[in-house]
Amino acid sequence: MKPAPFDYYAPTTIEEACALLADAGGGATILAGGQTLLPLLALRMSQPFVLVDINKIAALKGVARLDGATRVGSVVTQNEAIDDPMLNRLMPLLVTATRHVGHHQTRNRGTIGGSIALGEPAAELPATAVALGASIEVRSVRGVRRIQAEDFYLAPYSTALTADELITSVDFPDWPVDAVPVFREVAQRPGDFALLGVTGMLAIQNGRISRASMAWFGMGSTPTRARQVEAELIGKDIAAIDARALAELAIADTTPFDDRHASAEYRRTVGRKIFEQTLLAALQLRRAA
Amino acid sequence: MSEHKIEVAINGRQMQATVEGRKTLCDFLRVDAGCTGVHVGCEHGVCGACTVIVDGLAVRSCLLLAVQANGCEVTTVEGLASSDSDLHPVQQAMKDEHALQCGFCTPGIVMTLVALTAEPHKPKANALLEAMSGHVCRCTGYQGIRRAARKLAGSKDSP
Image 1 (tube, helix red, strand yellow):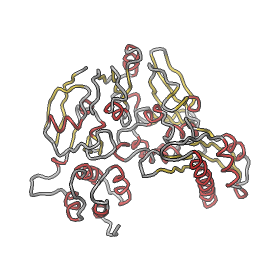
Image 2 (cartoon, rainbow over the protein chains, first blue to last red):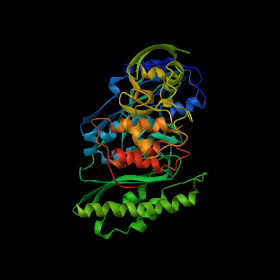
Image 3 (cartoon, rainbow over the protein chains, first blue to last red):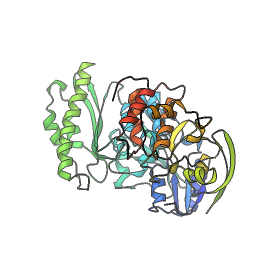
Image 4 (cartoon, rainbow over the protein chains, first blue to last red):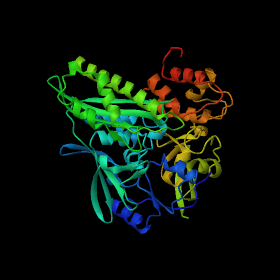
């Protein structure tokens, strides 16, 4: 099918974009990479009156250093993030997670900000933003506000972003450069939506875990932080980890659902197993280093 | 409903047109520019048949609006070889390895492989094979396509 008619605008400044969103009174949709939006338009599941293309706004591009964090502009494409030397050095988890988003061809257009804004429960980047404690900066004609990734996701495809707001950047706070990324997902085919996955970071000092952050995707209606296992991991000697018991604890915070692809029970069973395997693999990698 | 004047370089030829905001790049290429080598399969980003190269990157032309390509350079399968008796190295590899049957998905696959093997890229077989996950082929069983991809990466291994 073809998209229903709309008015298309391609502003070059954040202020112009915010004014367009405000003027549309809720009838506008933001076009970032468009790799989810264009299908929704073609299927007429989405019929906005106004489309605001933010790809021409230079202020939304690029990766930059802040004090204690790395800022990713909202229209940085997924393949740009994968190839970015600063992100590879400072945010390896974000790079690994982004490699699993869609296909090479969709990552050439799809953006970091767009995936985070969509709030698909089985998507890699929302859960990774939650695990990394990212802060999402949003602008509107009413001003600027920052939303913690953990507070951003309300329900499937429902976020704290209001109709007149635009994500300008996602700021990822620093982790120690030798911290270990933990990432694993299960999908039926490469590039498909994941059935489930786990994403997080472990910092290790003197053989003990000093900081842990873990989140699940596809294991509930929003990204799910595994708080109980994080608390349990802190201070643990990495030579004496009971990965199976920790996997049990990691599952305790999840509320997976049945759908046509997998049952909730399947998700819990596979989740336990991948958590155990991925934790052990990450610690082995660290011991070998 | 908005209309927009755009100027796009298609296979090296500058083209001006006025398009509705909602017109996708694949429809513009087929209907307005006559590049019917751009095959439209699913029209919602799943099958990869409509893949073209925009400013050096392989993208799905059904997931881009024509107005977004304003000022861009677009290459379709028509822009690869200088004559009908001539083949681009990617097309030659596809032919040699029997990597097509009905040919519907072929232009998309060719454009992804062309983008990833163009200078200055030195693609590894794994990267080409991974990028093939973005294409659906209902005939070949993929083995010929994978052989062509490996050949283009300079890998002699059989799949």
